[in-house]
Amino acid sequence: MQNGTLLAAVDLGSNSFRLEIGRVDHGQIHRTEYLKETVRQGNGLDSARNLTPEAMQRGWDALARFGERLAGFKRSQVRAVATQTLREARNRDEFLLRARTVLGFGIDVIPGREEARLIYQGVAHMLPHNEASDRERRLVVDIGGRSTEMIIGHALTAQVMESYRVGSVAWSMKHFPQGQFTPSAFRSAEIAAKAVLDDALGTYSSDQWDVAYGASGTIGAVSDVLVASGAPVGVVTREGLDWLLERLLKAGSVDKLRIDGMREDRKAVIGGGVSVLRAVFDLLDIREMKVAQGALRHGVLYELLERDDSVADLRAATVARLAARFEVDAAQAQRVSQCAAALYLQIDPSARDASNASRSGRALRKLGWAAQLHEIGAHISHSDYHKHGAYILDNADAPGFATNELHQLSQLVLGHRGKLRKLEAALEDEVMVAQLLALRLAVILCHARRDPDPQALKVAASGRVFTLSCNKGWPEAYPQSAHLLREEMLAWQKTNWRVELPAGF
Image 1 (cartoon, rainbow, N blue to C red):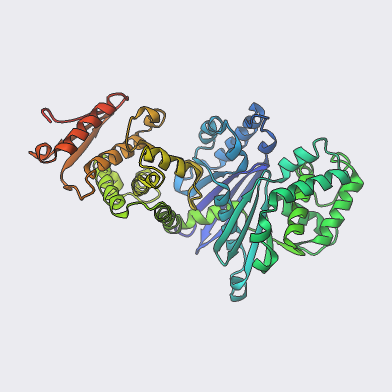
Image 2 (cartoon, helix red, strand yellow):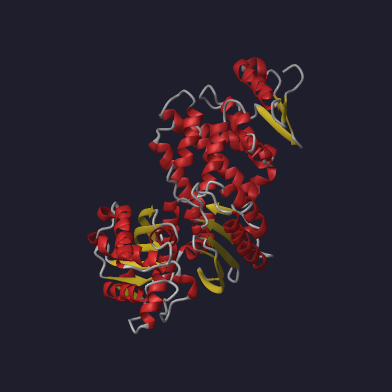
């Protein structure tokens, strides 16, 4: 991107929504504006894991204000990501439908490990780059509202990533519901946090890293209080945590808490946050933790800066890894991928010269990934392998992909064969329909597992009608393919779209 370009990241966290705007300057991003709204969606989940109307409204109101500030930004300049609360919420689609409208941009719900990877990117990019720092093995911990991410990395590469369902909002609601600070409440909160985080003991033990860094809200809030008490800037120690616990116990409750350096909006969740942080220190034998300047939103910004190359490469590597793991027939996957791309370009010629940032370019690229993975479920069972493949993609760890992006791929894999009624909602999206038709036709043309005639089939689109044509004599030369195309025409007749074949085909 050119120097001077503005980029924006929106972080829909469980405790706060944040908007970070930065200006590109010779490969670096310098902040021009930062907005934060304490939304606390994390405590807006009811017993059925649905966001309450009040929690949704708080989120919509905050995003509407962000949207006003982002007016005039291009899609390629903005990325919004949502984390644990919206990963959990059963009615997230209801929230996201309006949220995307009021914000004016798409919102990606990212998996926990993808969140961890982006957090590391944000932290690593904001640290000094020199020979000594690039050699250090880093532990990065981010305690959010409803999840805690841990990462071990080196330089700009995250190597081990995990997300645990424990956070400041969730633990404050569960162990300090009336805002009372008692020794027994802190003891039970720490024990419960250690039980959730116990799996981290082997992977993130102190012999696996050289320096521990803490990112984002809880650790930053603790550091602010310790600095105000006279402690060194930029570091949280075990002694400091002991001192802070004593202050919380002395206050006895959130209402009576008066402590320099702590913002009012942090008081309600400080009990849960301190409990989780103390559990992390104890489990991983941490003596001190440096306070990182980078966070999730900074990772999102740097990936926007590098998205055309690094993220596309990361996703391509993820697709290749999944294909290898599930022993996909590589030759057939490549055959279908090339054929589907050629057919899609007939439907949307603008994709031929489209940049990665355009919708046409993204659609063509995702179609290629779906084609490479369309047989991924066959490793489980040949019967209904498209259903197995869709399930795998909806539940896989896939670095570089948001949850909703993986679901789009899973829907293409699910729909590449069989009846179309199972995709009724997706068929309202004309881009999805074009991708799906191109993939289904490619699978038909490649059914014999050999390269099809590249000029065998032509596709023309007009509104909701796709017209197919072929070379003279082709149906007679390839009777099985012609039969499958006639079956395909009948399948689309049961939708709001039509596929038409030449007379006498």
